[in-house]
Length: 140
Image (cartoon, rainbow, N blue to C red; front, top):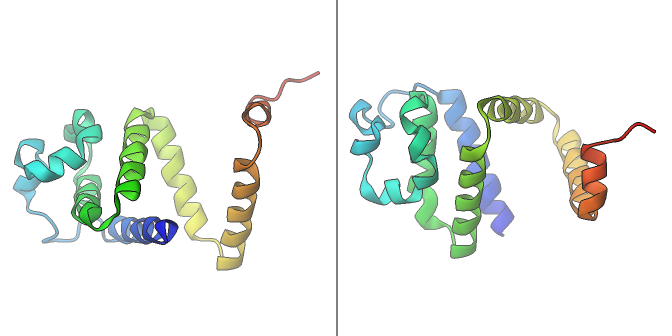
């Protein structure tokens, strides 16, 4: 169930990316951090330091996610907060690479997406030291 809501948010995020500069989602004034509603500022706090450098399309996406935050259960809300903190901590190049991978993943067929998901589950179940070895292979 939690995965369903996260998947739903991901679909909304993808839709928002495609619609990007859609008129009327959020007023231009609300795109400044000081104009964001306090309850949304609280949710989006991990992104505050980079907010003014973010393009308007990304701001709109994050504001839409903040609007849906209340519909999540506390575990999902914490998971979303952790993901926002992680996203905000990534260097720009890593965020760009992640967005590119996301776009490529969305172009896969449902069967291919299921295969990628299965591979991810297998990887995720590995011991941390095995994951580290895979991330940093040493030539012998």
